[in-house]
Image (cartoon, rainbow, N blue to C red; front, side):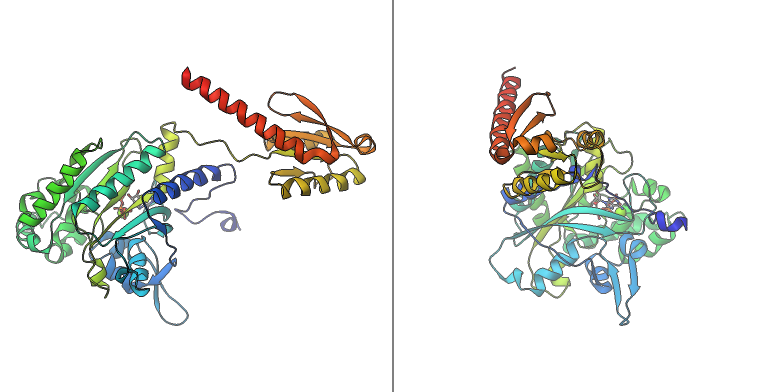
Amino acid sequence: MAILTKAPRGTVDVLPGESYKWQYVESVLRDAASKFGFREMRVPTFEHTELFNRGVGDTTDVVQKEMYTFEDKGGRSITLRPEGTAGVCRSAIEHGLLGDALPLKVYYFVSCFRYEKPQMGRYREHTQFGSEFYGSAAPAADAELICYVQYILDSLGIKETHLEINSIGCPKCRTEYYKALREYFRSYSDQLCETCLGRLEKNPMRILDCKSPICKEIAANAPRTLDYLCDDCRAHFDGLKARLDKTSIKYVENSRIVRGLDYYNRTVFEFVTDALGSQGTVCGGGRYDGLSESLGGPSVPSLGFGMGLNRILMLMEQTGCEFPEVDRCDIYVGSAGDSASIAAAGIISDLRAEGFKAEGDVMVRSVKAQMKYCDKIGAKYSCIIGEIEQANGMVRVKNMKNGETYEVELDGMCQFMYDRMVADALDDAAGAAEDFGG
Ligand code: ATP
Ligand code: MG
């Protein structure tokens, strides 16, 4: 029976005491997206397997080793999405969005499924925030996208990341580059892992992305893409760097970044941290001008990124970033006795209708037990209605933070709470101003 109460390997539960952190991060991301003009898209959790074989590429680790693929009852091959880009591009093509006014800028939150070896920061289901930017081939778009990611990291208070960029050229410059790579790797063919041996002829650049330690060591001295760029790709890369140089964003060139997925060309980038051990990439992205066409859509240049939110949250926790206070209960209206409980329910209902977060007793518990619960949920104010309060039409309301109490008419609870909320907000603002002036 133990299996019923144990989650499958590599999955994560977000519990009520933690979910506010996710909600906070999500709200910052939505805000940033809207500032940069990106609008949300929601796409299915599963797609036809062929979409990922094509869109992600059949020489990638993701497709070769990690996909959750199954046959559905209608005999179709279906895959749980391992990433967001291919499905979003499929949808944009299907609904004619790429023929509309460009640029098209979209964002999404998706759970992604990859059969990986679970470890800290690496799961079989993880969550990504991603954005896609369709329509511009200019390096201005690459710079804009990178500024957008940096803006997100800044907004979350994340300081411990750095940016690594590379250009992996276009199909034109890749002919020469692949030749050089094949030549280099052939001399190590007795040491490469089996998967990489298969990649040698089909897509030798994939070997640079292999996680096996031996392949990694061999790849360290392999020819660099940057030495093989054609004039156009070189100018594009220089254009991106010139723009980044005009911002405060620091970057390093790293010729080892080729990105895990097949559809990339020209710019590739990663935001990396040293604070999360070997799972240090919190965001990866780049340009993939050929993707739409390879899926049967129009030729539309595009770029985007995927940000691993599990890693972002871990990084924020580990480096002491703040998560704003939980959305707490405004007032707990307790009661003693059946008749008071009915009166309390009416008041709670009125408070909620006016927009307050209000709770009361539904457990038929003692006043003492109710107060314990009220503490536990961190209610800002509390009161207990009993026979005397009902008879007098008055109740004592307590500020749970400083212990101050107020005599309030039962009929005037909503007005009282309005006044308190305004007064508390003014107090908070005055405190913040003092800290600022400090
Ligand atoms: P890695 O090299 O770490 O395997 P990747 O190149 O496979 O990463 P992408 O496909 O670019 O990753 O996904 C974008 C982001 O999603 C990554 O930068 C990372 O933050 C996150 N991510 C990818 N795979 C996982 C996973 N299995 N568990 C948690 N987060 C992940
Ligand atoms: Mg991976």
